[in-house]
Length: 383
Image (cartoon, rainbow, N blue to C red; front, side, top):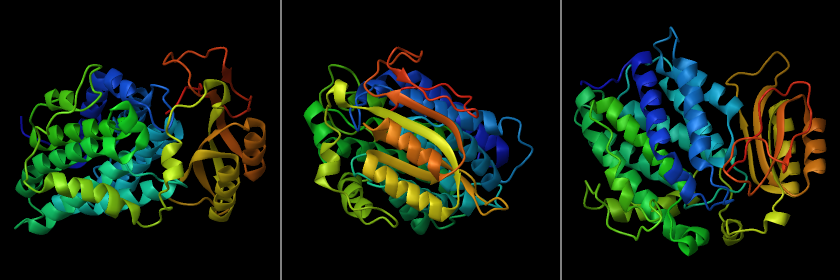
């Protein structure tokens, strides 16, 4: 089957395949989930994000790639759960701006889109950490940028199709490298779950563009993918220097990405297993704020917890200059966190979920949700 690179058909096909791919691999991704909290839900959180993306574009009349990704990202972010689910929604939103006015995806367009997605994703986190989905995103952007620069006809369909095997290979190697970048992953002898989920989504993109079947067999060589896995080589090695470049990109380039905070050993160490009795809750909500208010709230949340994500949902401000912002934080001080959030601005969909919950998605006895008139979404455990 010929691949799709144009308009709503291509975007919907990618999200449809990515949804199927994540469904197929959800348990493997959950098993890898040890950072920042080992709560075994990365696969489900990323699946929820992609499912929201797919439904948002399913009946869209638009053929503009930027409009489609903006709609998908906004819908996904308003429903996002967990670190990886939220960051994937931010990434999708980031693809939109450089693709506005374009109906056909090219390798040069993808390079521009990934550049913006990278900046948005790193900037969303107060304390970004290498060895995560962010490192894989950096490596993928570097590979796409390289392929675009080397292509004789970067606007051609052929250039995009030819690049995709190298892009997936680079992502695979970047995922492999995460095990040595985070102490928590090295100790558990696994690769990063969010980065692995992004690799699965990229396999779906490869299948969308080329028309080939999705191939998940090489994933079985990733440390931790199966319970008895041992580290092996990279079966997706398409370019000789990819392994060295992947290791290089996920540290040096990641550390100096624009709009990022400094990566510290202390923040990496926070990914190790914690006492369930003292691990606190994960707070998620949407708040309407102007940019200054969002910066002030981020500062307050930094003092109350970690894994802080503050990222805009809307592309444009309302009449008062405010945006909807998606908020995510792990905290042991939920009452103070709730007070800070509600003092900042109008709140929607506030939830506070006990960390270290079982993978069961039903509300359990450790579920803590403050009642809000605007809340209409169930709480879930998060990564």
